[in-house]
Image 1 (cartoon, rainbow, N blue to C red):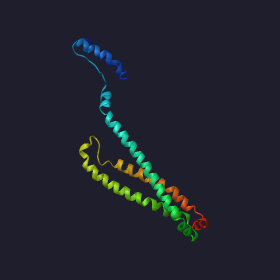
Image 2: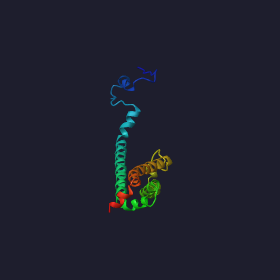
Image 3: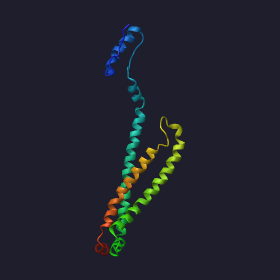
Image 4: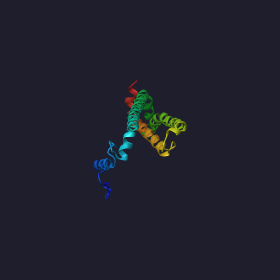
Amino acid sequence: MGQIRLTNATHNVEALSLPIQRVINAMDRDLAVTNVETLPQTIGKSTLGAEFNSLLVLGFAVIALVLAGAGLYGVLAYLVAQRTNELGVRIALGAQRAQILRLTLLEGLRPALAGAALGFASSVAVAKLIRSLLYGIEPYDSTVFLGVITILLAVSALACTIPAWRASRLDPLQALRVE
C-alpha cells in the first residue's frame, strides 16, 4: 500500500488530491473518491452564504451612513441659511467666529449625540435577545460598541463642520442685507 509523506509544510495541498485518490483506490476499488478538498476549502464553501450576507449588510450599512451624513449636512446647511440674519447680528454685535462655529456645531451634533446614546441603549437590549444566535462572538464587545459610536460621531462631526465653518465666516453686512 502506498504512503504519502509530507516532509515540508510548504507543499501545495491541492496537488496531493490525485495521489490521495490513487491510494484510496488501491485500498478499495469500489470506493469512489470525489471532491477531495482541504478543510479550509470545505469550511469556505459551508460559510459562503453567511459571508455574502455579511458583505451585503455591510454594504447597506455604509450606504446608510453616507445618506445619514448627507442628510445631516443638508439639514444643518438649511438651518444656517435660515439663521443667516441672526448669525449676522451676533457677529455684528461682537460674537467671535469661534463662538459662532461652536454654536452651530453643537446645534448639529446634539441630535447625533442623542441618537448615539439611544442606539447604544437599544443595541445592548437587542444583544440580550440575540445572544443565543451568536457563536464564538461576545455580544457585549466594547471595541465594537465604541468603534461604531466613534464612526457615527465622526461622520456627524464632518457633516456639521462645513455649514458651521460657513456660518462662522459670514460677513455681517451681507448677512443683514439678505432680508
